[in-house]
Length: 70
Image 1 (cartoon, rainbow, N blue to C red):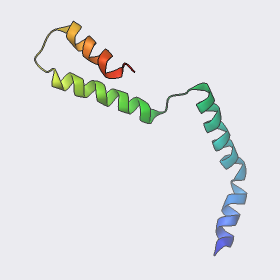
Image 2 (cartoon, one colour; image 1 turned 120 degrees about the horizontal axis):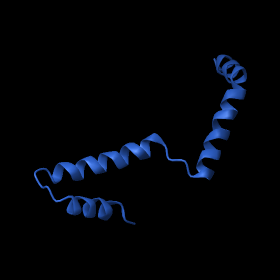
Image 3 (cartoon, helix red, strand yellow; image 1 turned 180 degrees about the vertical axis):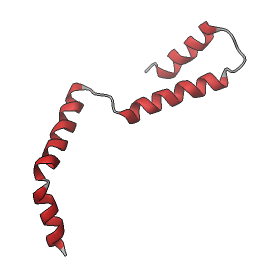
Image 4 (cartoon, rainbow, N blue to C red; image 1 turned 135 degrees about the vertical axis):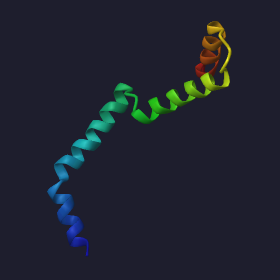
């Protein structure tokens, strides 16, 4: 029952350790994951849809800055 899982982990242990080592290194470097980028892109698209028909680029820029300003 557990022997198959143990064999799999032993066979792939180096890759598993490398995966977690890379993740921790990316977090220390402040890497942005694709999930974060997708969220940012989605927020921009929502603001763009809400302003459909308006041609004032300065207003669009101000709305984007307000959405992402801490």
